Every structure is written in structure tokens, then in C-alpha cells.
Length: 208
Image (tube, rainbow, N blue to C red; front, side, top):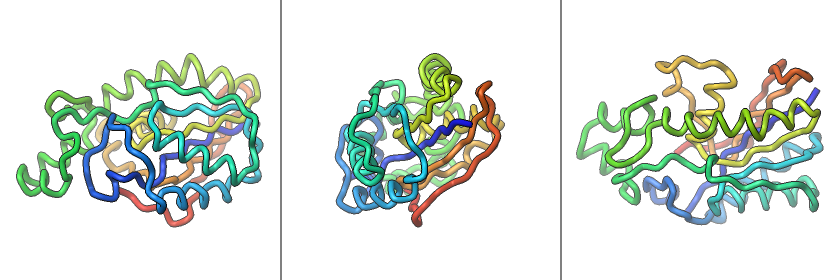
């Protein structure tokens, strides 16, 4: 059996201010670093062989904190923009709750959680799915089939897209999937690349 562990980054500087972040390359807060360390402490039973992370600093810093907790110094670490967060377009840098107040709950939720509705000049979750899943099939799945334990450190929406694929979640139900800061989804795979087990490990993860 092999493991695929998916981890959302810890709280970022813009998360703390309730700003739409997307592709903006902001760092973790100290709280976010602590969240990552807490998650790392829950993963000491798994020996990882390879890590895939996005190109954004908040994912890289989360992995740095986790790696110190699980005492891994040398491990293949592959960065790729295919795992980057969703591009929020014209919403980027704006306060989420002010947008909700201005446009109303229905439109707010469509932009925030829907499957195929794009914010102005941004990406929908479907757009993110269309870049994450080919990357998973080409780069990550072969490692699992080769018996490697894989950790992926990325973002709320790139991971929601991957979870949708892995668990075959219908389009209309993906809005219900929420991933907390530094929350770890631990999947167990057989040699054919099929999921045979799942658990969520959390140290009291928050969602934003």
C-alpha cells in the first residue's frame, strides 16, 4: 500500500485579512506556520518519498515547516504552477465580506464555491480542475503506482479539484467540500492506483 497526502497551506497574510488571494504570492503568518507544524506532527508515521508543491510561497513555507516536524531533509520536491491556487481575477486583493455585502449572498457563493462560474477575468473551479487533473495523471499517479508515498502541498481550490476527481464528487456537490488550513487528507492506494482508504488528520483546522 502507498499513501497520497494532500495538505492545504497554513494561514497566509491575506487570509488573515479576509482578502481574495489567488495567484498573489504572499507568505504565511506565524499562526500559519504553527498550523503547518501541528499538521507535520500528525504525519510522522508516514515515510514520504516525493513532494509536489505549487509555485507559491505559502505552499513552500508550509512544506518547510512540515518537513522539519517529520525530520525529512533530502526528498525530491517538485514545484509546478499547475498546482497553484485559483486565479480570482478582478476579485484579487478585495475583502471577501465586503464583496458579499456589495453583491449579495447568492453571487458571492457562486464566485466562491461554484463549479463552473468564473469571477470577472478569473478562473472557475472547473478551470482549475482542467489543469490539476492532467498534471496528477501524468506526474503524481505514476509515482503512486511505483509504490512511492507522495505528499502534495497546495491550495484550497487546487486540492478541492483533485479531491473531486479522486472521490468522484458530482459537480453540484463540490461546493460543500471545505479544506481547513494545513488540514491533511490521507489516501491509501493499492498497487493499481485505486483508493482503498481515507482519513482526515487535523489539529483543529480553520477554514477561510
